[in-house]
Length: 386
Ligand code: SF4
Image 1 (cartoon, rainbow, N blue to C red):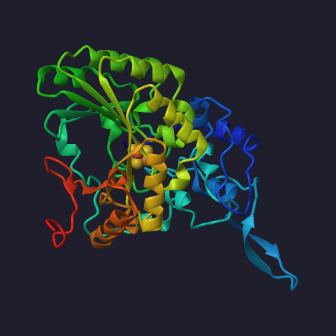
Image 2: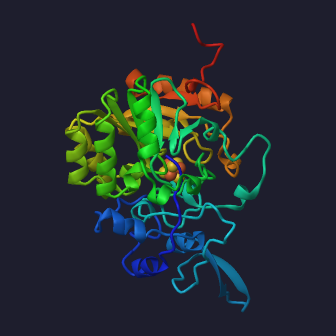
Image 3: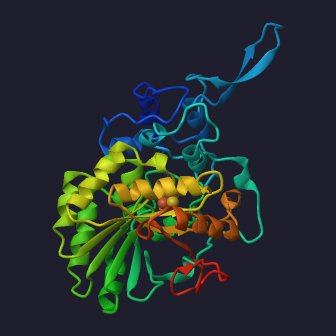
């Protein structure tokens, strides 16, 4: 998956303001209200600027007179009438947060682990050595327009530049989607490549997020892949079931569960608070329909760099039949250095998790290295072989 293209739909956003009522301005994480709108409306009404995000969460500093007559900042003011700053032309990775996800963020808490994933901060403007625009070598792996071929037997189609959320640590935050014509792209070059390579038996749909494609477009792509005889497996990499769970429609479940291909779904949750009952019920429907669901998480400073948080995440996943798959070391993309957790710390966390979880609930701690022919496991050499 990678990040979202931006469209200007300020009218819908303004319309959505009156619909959204925060469940609480203090206290613990709330269970979000049942989704009331279809997924495409959820995309249109998403928050698209960080000022509005702060206001929605009661984190805007506004001046108020104190008893001495002087102004002092308040961090809990809720001011709907403040103008929302639009992303500037040079802001290539604007804010995008659906209200369904916002409802899982604790109002008034600037350190909320879900908020940290989506709120742009000045840290993103700090250049740090070793952090680049293309940390995993995507651009040199483009084998046909819109298709990456990195690993033996598998190829990845960049289906779209759109996502259901913008994660500030995203490794494709600077991916040049427009060069792929991602908005109205043709599948032909990707499908031709797959047809010419009988050794490819698995196709990954990524992006962006493949589940931001409308049903007809997605159905067309699945039909075309099914028509390639040597392809046996189809894997979705998507955050949509986590951030906008109503995207998993009856049509989607029916289409994927009746495919001739073995369909696998890899979702992306980093913290147990992301897994509310709507998300878990939605994923349960996929699993009930015979579609295996795996989770990959990214190890993120201030979000999940804590053994208890990771254990809670993994146990919540397996309690709901979702397999913890990968814990990724952060891809060193420009603008995300403040999220990095040292590998040594990650290894210590994995060691703690080994003592807390059953083996099947333990994800593999890995890093993606540009040019490598697989993900690289991160293991403590002093402990391996013991
Ligand atoms: S959902 Fe987040 S991490 Fe995944 S591709 Fe989109 S922005 Fe990147």
